[in-house]
Image (cartoon, rainbow, N blue to C red):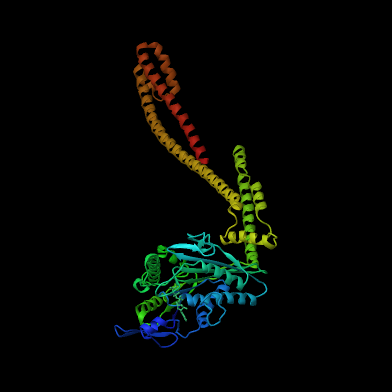
Length: 576
Ligand SMILES: Nc1ncnc2c1ncn2[C@@H]1O[C@H](COP(=O)(O)OP(=O)(O)OP(=O)(O)O)[C@@H](O)[C@H]1O
């Protein structure tokens, strides 16, 4: 995190200020960091502290060294940077940014922009031989809330877009590749000639638009093929103005209103960014704040140069600028290095990926073996069906062939293409998804098959359990039947005994009861049989009783054999 660096610059009094206010100043110089503001009306003095204060006698070179040079050095190391000039109209923003003219050769007057140009090419000249540079320049102005391309005036309503790769950018803006300081200055001059300028009471050459210069410095290492990209935004804001002071009318008035509106949107963004409580930052309220989104609270190192007039004639505007700077000082940015991986780093990443591939291959082979072993012992049809849908051996071979086995051997431009593809895929921590689609399908099929196997096992288990359950039930039923049979048996035995007794009593009735006593059953039966003929009436009665008895006995025998059978079944079931 780094705070926005805020500097203040007071320009010398101009002729009008010297004349009208007799050269009176609203500030008192304390030191390079503190200034006293005197409010003549209230007779109050307020001290303001900034990173650096440049007074009327300051040099352009000092301003550049303190405000812009650290940002250029950072941009050469792939850290984005922004330099903004802010202040009342005629306060010296354009003078500080460009100097009297972009092509000025006078070292005393040269502004920030031509100095940035010079230092970039000086640093390139002194850079390591392995470093290759690519410098791009774009220029736009935000005029009446429209973004105009100063290098191609046909593009007069460009849009600000944002994506992961580029952050905030102006879509479709012209980018000129520049090879020398001279070429850059020429392009800058051409672009500035297209800028909207007007004459006001405050400034005979007042900028009526916000001007944004974008320099992209791309540095590639020809040895390890790493790429670093730093961007520098140089923004010369249009000046805030009080309409009565500038005498703006008609078109100028309309421009002034739009300028003031976008500057107040900038103030709102700064207030939101420095608010104690987290709140919505209204970057989208104006084209200016949208373009500056990364410079204010984003991925950029930002320096703000607040330009002021020291004259008491503009005390209120100066006070407002000093307050704006004080607030902006609290903004925290998150600059980071924008670099792409080099060849060695990519190679080690690829190596790591190959190791992961090897592990995957090993897993596949193990899974194949596991599937094959699962397949064994399955019913023929099921196995055939399974093999139709998934052949693990063939599939794993197919996958193994699809994995990359070596680093693509590329040279020259082709390398960049390969690198881009691989960097992107590595950054996303995976190869092209299509390379893995078969693997994914295979893993799904394998999982599905394993689930199917498990389901079958569970079904068998359930079946076994329910069979056990059924057996238990059968045993219970059989035991109940057995108990019933035992009851029946004992009942029949009792009945048998009763019948026997009755038979004996019956025989006693037919014959001499004393003869029947002690006779064995078959003897009794044949004896009874013999007597039937002798006494048919009694015999019939006896016959009925005998037949009943015989029936009961046979039933009893039947039950007995059933009982034996049941006992056998129970014995078998228990053994099973
Ligand atoms: N530090 C300085 N030393 C000498 N002259 C200066 C300085 N700053 C500004 N001036 C002069 O003041 C006048 C107005 O300056 P400049 O055009 O830079 O103002 P500005 O803030 O860009 O105004 P606007 O917002 O209207 O474009 C110019 O003539 C410029 O040369």
